[in-house]
Length: 417
Image 1 (spheres, helix red, strand yellow):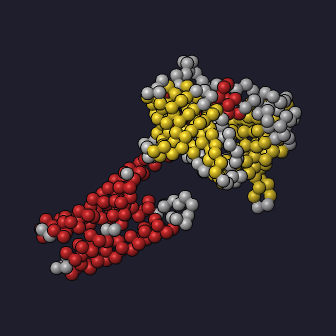
Image 2: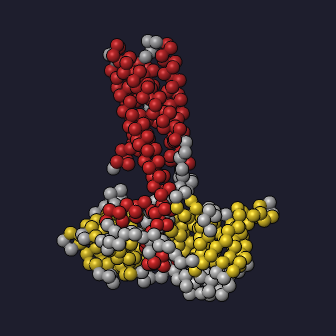
Image 3: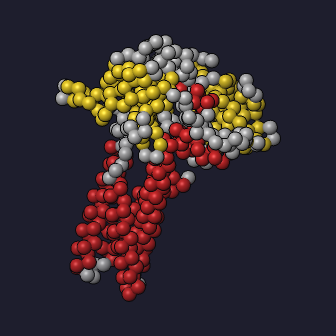
């Protein structure tokens, strides 16, 4: 409801040509005022036409449209209309014109709301950006907290001769390389006050020696050729190259890595007070569509946190931008209600065991479909699995932060389970 009210006031601001035109009509005793107000009315009308076109025509033709123009248009227009409304109220004091009073009020109120809402949104965006910047450090600390979280993230690193954790010398731009028994390679580098994954690669599963070259896929979309040179037992040098202008060029300086034990970062010896239930899922096929439902679930006493995906996909096709939704709730009268205040879709669980969750999906309070979820993973997460479980609020804040902008890619498997 609040979003609808905000949008109505947003449109009212760009329909300011109506009260401006009324002001021009009310000021017809002054030729200069009439000309100025008429010019502003015409400009406001053009702005209104532009906004309506962008909102109802352009945005419907674009996937995930981003209105950068509003960053300039909203503060300029709302500031101008506030000034004009204040001027109109000043004129009304002397003229006592009801038309000028009503016109000024209809200029000031929507413009003031939009002006405040815009700067609040900017403040909120900056706050969100700061949270996003903190995600690498949160993930790194959680992944390297203990042996359990490390294995959940990287798998077995002791099953083959080349698998293991390799550390670089202090001061190098790259910090560590991790290779698991299945041949997956992670290259880390320094990023601010933490470490981040620079790029990933895959080598032959079960390899007994490292290959001479590997193809590294950077997390910013850049591809690198990695040249590996063994320099001793459990030590190798990695040099990266990039392709530019049809030729290969060195990327930064080569780094030497040595196999070493993992230094875990966890220091809190208190027992975890939050229980992680795990992932539960079901799927249904409707013609050529498949609808998977997956739930990640955490609990402390009667309070619960969850992330939830329910969406229809075309069978056999890859799908991107799949975003999990945050839910929370409490167990009351042997039923768990999970909801998000910004969504009219919620879940109610009436029976919960480690082998099955039974309940319903509610849409605006009405049952949409029944649920029977079993322990299963459709969308594998390298984030949710390592959430800190020390206390409820810490876990809640951590999960809400690392889920910002977090999306899945899935090749729709059309099977019922």
